[in-house]
Length: 159
Image (cartoon, rainbow, N blue to C red; front, top):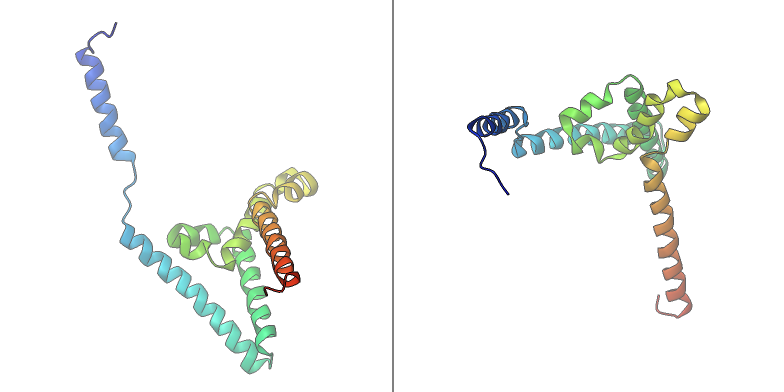
């Protein structure tokens, strides 16, 4: 049978609820969105500056300057991850730092940096695709399925 709770138990439960309220972080959605917007915007401005630099000053065409921009952004993200700076940017900017290509580069580099002490093969080699592996796998698989559907539709004369 259920015994009634003692006054001591009730006080402990009440104290515990107050403790949980004190340590539970509160989130300001508007502030989080503003920070994400600013962070993502800065990354995009850097990307646009790289595109303009590559096309205007290095004489690259549109496709080549896009590749140059992506390469530099990935390089900067990995470099900042290696120096443990990018996690601070992510903490401040949230999705604004995780959604662009820099976030994907960070997700590949972070496990490699974290597990380097376990060695090149069992540390870096095994852990580098912990987060990025499923993204790459399902991206390739989805591309294959869509290509197959396109091919079937083309053979049937629909496309």
